[in-house]
Image (cartoon, rainbow, N blue to C red; front, side, top):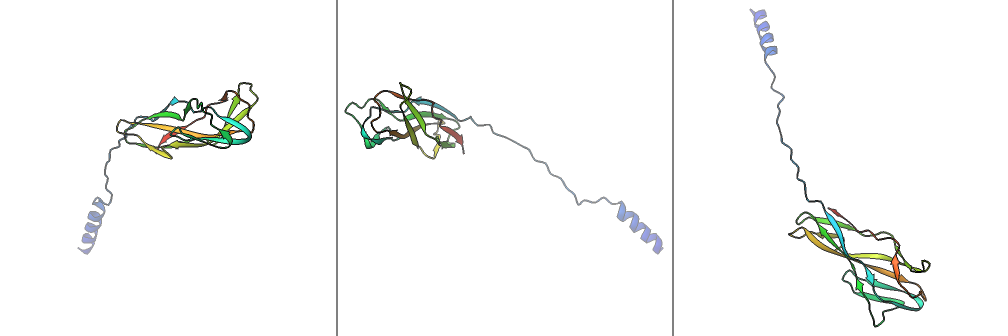
Length: 169
């Protein structure tokens, strides 16, 4: 009888299914947001500048105001002074980072020989922006114009455009 009982336990014990493993399921989802975009609306212009025998700078703020140092001065006829302006568009209330140029941009005289540089880029907002309830914001950019001593008079324009990059956070 004892052998039969042990045999019964062995058969029943090994014949019963084990419930140590369980499973669950989950769903997956994704949300596609409006891509961020940037569109230039106004080019940067330092306006009219004069210079004496000393080098100087013209600092243009993102608000479009300027100040001068060294031998650079602003004549009575200011000319067109504008910070660069960009329209940013994308997902409502999203934040984004702003990347300004890391290097200087060269401005060349129409004679293609004389030149000046633009550097020390600044923006408003900075270093991040937030799109409003319509998914828009205006980004303005200023910089510093480095004027050489006795810089040749004439029109100077950039040899290549500068790049401003925006990206969602």
